[in-house]
Image (cartoon, rainbow, N blue to C red):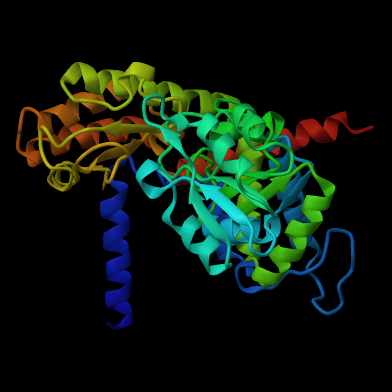
Length: 424
């Protein structure tokens, strides 16, 4: 392709994607200003060292280290963590660092099996490190770890033990207090919050470090509205923090200052909005589950209130195969995951409301969205006949980036002036 063709493809994708309602549980937007660092010198520079310390091997990076310190301090406050590493360059990178730092040679790692909603890479990483991987025993009746079975298995294991809680499919919090009681103090517990980190930060899900986890981490671009190129590992244990730093330095060299700067802007936004945003995400997810049920869909985990996170799972196969359903909704302008769902015999739909909530979706909009999905999948209206209604719903809730950037800039300036005025 020549340059014009390359630009044409990118513009075509941008225009088409911006006209759809996105319900992918693993994606989000960022505050508009968080995109700015990717247009600056931060994108092409290395940054080593700490804030306030000159590093003459890499001169002139002081502002970048200041941004990293601000991002780390801010996300630490949101997660109730004293020590934060921003070295990881993705959620999988954070997983690799955590497993490397928290296990000894020939240790045992418990994590969720993929059939129970765990991430497939955890087992792969553990096995490549020469560790003994075992699936966490689950109780499908309550969608939780079977702590009695876990206690029995843990008693029979000698040597290092890591419980890695990696919910790729995440409806409900883990009972970390009970898991800690089951494995005892000799085990390490790491909470992978890739999907729920924004809800944790907003106090709307659970507080892993306060409940007994030794560390938590993950990506920052799902419920946390941050850059996709960044991961985090956090802890309140000074010794463990040193281990994480050593292993992070071994696994990651260049940790992308533009991503760190973008995260600093996202953290600043979350510092002001996390509680309201996280509460709205959970409220919208529960409302969507109820609205879809009222429209005639079968939503998983009804006996437990469907969800306490951003995710909603729909058993769609009795109505229409999941891939066909995703295709029909896509034609109408609604983007969803057709995916294997725990304890269903056929793939279902995994919906995530965090991106639309970030854009401003409220309960009324959720009801409209459920009705539009029913028109396509239950009433079998042609997708093209629903597209205008989808576009109208999107127009009411999705603010343009230009306006959002102006609003964010004005907000940050007001905040800076207030802080200036309070300074003696």
